[in-house]
Length: 381
Image (cartoon, rainbow, N blue to C red; front, side):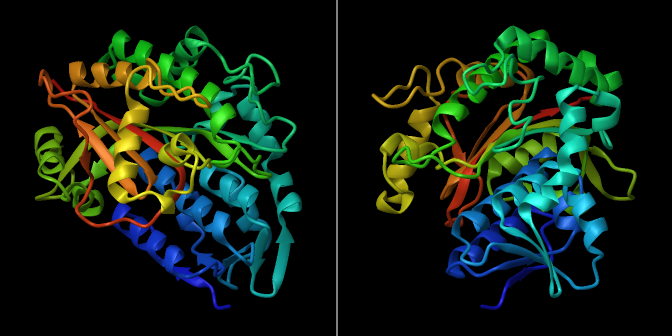
């Protein structure tokens, strides 16, 4: 079977096109460029690519991920093991193929051991690259339950909100540096409760499918980044809804490029390779739900104290984050199943917390797992 060749995955539009190609390919192998895996473009974009790789791996009949024969295998694997999208790809795939040369997953992931140890040690100077950091929990690895996120080497020992608060304060002090004072304590408190709850729930609900059959391979974690979204590359991704256009216009600054604008922001993306919100809550594959049913269940999963007999839901976490975003003016995007929904707030606006809109009008292909991204504009007074 000929591989799907995805040459460009720079924008969300290109990632969604890639997901459609994967959905239509009936399990074909995948070939991507090295930069699509290890390039740091911001948490919003990097987590979207990670989700694409997970989606492909869940459906693939030939498990090796392909790269152009011009790549050097050793250099390629080193790059893949340096960042969350590549690490997730390696864990979910069977191996790496460059031309006729194949390296299996287990051997390839040996290169990630140093990265995982540095992360476990919370060695921030050596794991922050270009004002971007990832913490990725990889099933089957000795350091699966990373010390910054878990108090013990156990799925039942994710850190509480106080532990997460300390972690995020240290991270943001490093990656946001002079902009740390722009992040209110109320937001830090809310994101800490959310992340503690999320990691606890992912260990229960994202490590198995909708029937609670355990996955052999899974990943979960987060990416945090500080940076500038330049109009030339990224504005087109904010044109699918009037509220997104308003967000870009409201938050954009004059760019260094003549005639261009940019949005300076902190991005934080949480990801997992589970069945997705609606599939887990409904106890059935997404394809057995109508799109409207899936969307309704997805929103219900986000609401305060949502519970089913088998599932603990979002509890206090997402409502608290939404409230904090409304206070400071920010955006949340959730990609799960066949939906990409968002809510965004202007500074001081009183939008309804659960008034989610679709990121674009297009019907989307199904994506595996879930990605929750939070964007906080860093405004210059």
